[in-house]
Length: 279
Image 1 (cartoon, helix red, strand yellow):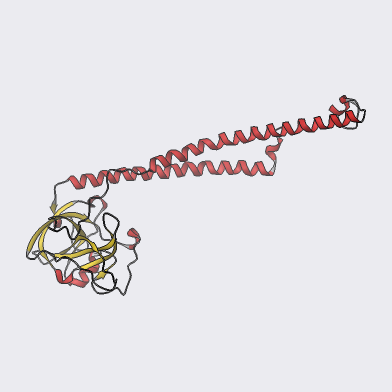
Image 2: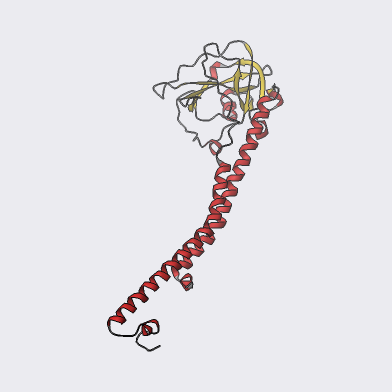
């Protein structure tokens, strides 16, 4: 009664199950590796946020690519804000998901180099062609504390670097692009200001990145692996059900044949054997 497993339908079903199992194993490991990456990332963020701040010139220099190990590293920088070359970064969200802009102001160091400082978030102007209302940067020599971040790219952020934008508006934070505009060396990456906090809370400073949540990746990994175990179990259940249904159909057919034979005056034994022949 298992010859039905050689039918086209069951061969396809069995092959599909054999293909799905390793695929789901790989999907489970993919989610598990994402879980490990998230845990590692959380540890890196927490360590860098708790570390003592160091001068920004010890972490980066003109043309330097900030490595992932230095993301969110606490740093200090002293200089004078260059409000003349301040720009806003379009289409950025606040902590409560409102759409606005980031205020990006160069801070000129005593040696003439500059570093980009993300002073925080403000609402965008009603007309996107208009420069928004931005609180002025502090005048004179200042010392700020912040988190070091890497230059943004379209590949990493998914944000397109649109051309033809209104004056003093950009899509990405790019120290190389800023150096060409300023005509002076600019340290690689930028500083996300955390202190001092503006007296009126504007611009709204960027909150710490989330480093407590590990996300659902481990749960997804376990689910994929449970699906792997469920495939052969489901296959066996379907095989047994098919066999039971076929046996029931054969028994019903035999009973119908026996009933028909009895009505014709034939012996029941003849029905149990080959139809139309004596047993």
